[in-house]
Image (cartoon, rainbow, N blue to C red; front, top):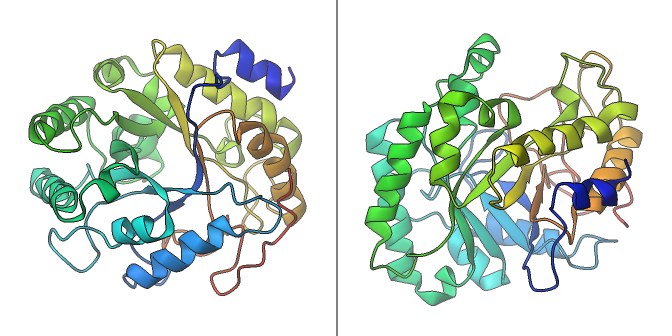
Length: 313
């Protein structure tokens, strides 16, 4: 099927009244593990909005944590940077590090709402409790050494905890969701998470799907197959595309080859179909994953605002 037909068939085409957002994912550290501060986030948000060929449409940021790197529970400086650059935020909270860390995440978020007021809360698209925690704790994730993760029951508990703590604050009523892979979303033991959220975040990387043919020629179909799986258990709730992309550099994954040409092809066929139709966060503006030193998904080098390929849709 053509991409527009995919969107229509899944009920995912935005209506005239629906608000969709387009942005990137931003971690709290740089690729060398050093902490990012206010000026780092401000610079990246400004870079995103001024990328050649994108007409200034990358105006949103997805965060993985609400805690400023190097502190126990201070609000992440990306919140202030978002205010100063008029960037919308999909807030994130870590959910795989235990209850004490999650409580610190909640305290940081609530402190930000109190300290920064509506200048912050009006820019919040939604709040994600965790990222790929269900995948990490699944049999597939454990086989791939993906990390500790958290169970569906734990994520459900964290979501309920958040709703209780946000009651009476300026963040009450903001959509609360969770981000994961389609392979985790469809597991029966995670049905309670899907039932408890207001939106489902979908991370999809055909490049890594080595259990089936995954060359760039199959990437479009593989991507939409994954979206369809997440949509199938969403019960009509919004599905955000929270991570997707194709690397310009990296090891071959079965049939998938990392190259500038293939990254451009994937961006053109998948990204350009998503932008303006679904809330989507591309992976990524600059590389940051310290566990992936031999691979690059970034559209721009860390020290340059010039894209690696033409981003015109």
